[in-house]
Length: 319
View (cartoon, rainbow, N blue to C red):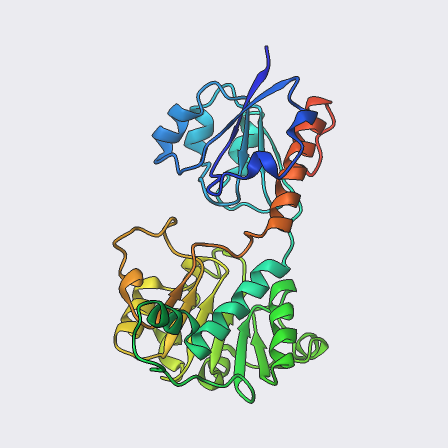
């Protein structure tokens, strides 16, 4: 009897086309789920009897309670080598192997800069107006050349954004808890204290991992330091920014606007206030969603299943 394998949250319905699943088809029966499954109990009910579950990073939470409800589960494969939505300790206690895949950083950096350009030049707004047949030219764009971009988190993704900003003739300043002036200079950025970065930047973009010390890092106080002409961009994780404080600032025009790819609750509820604000550009967590990245994700997912079946699991997370 073949093992049952669930592929979750394949919203674009491309998982089976992005990799050669025939490598495991003799031993594994694959079922793809294209929509969110619901709360933890609904997920447990849907996944009853599955030995293998393949996750798209941080779309479906896998807390301890879920592992307790899935006694047949033996292997979880997540895209990416980090997935804060998985209780890895609980997986280990329940003798479930957790494996990951590689993930490219450049797609998220590219999207971040896409949001910056969209906000600066009102591309989405003017596109909608053109298609609605409205009057010619309604907005005046903001130049990138000569403006200051503040990068919170100057790791691999933040460094890519810094280099792109330099190509546009922008001044780059950066801050994170562990960043030093010397490290900032290596990518052509100036180090600034967080408060100074917020005060002087025309664009503030966040490139940090979500953790206990970054949750709520940008709140009402921090947003209050920004210029009324400044824009906030978040392609990292929603809870790094206090969503209530951000919505209030946008409603009151305390900042010029925001470009958001991530949210406190995903998918973003249909009636969420962010969907109704005219000074926000929204994308549905597309940072890592590119064809090349998906080929890596799903190709290495199949590879991880094959290796586990052979008794030699690869890219094991959490030991």
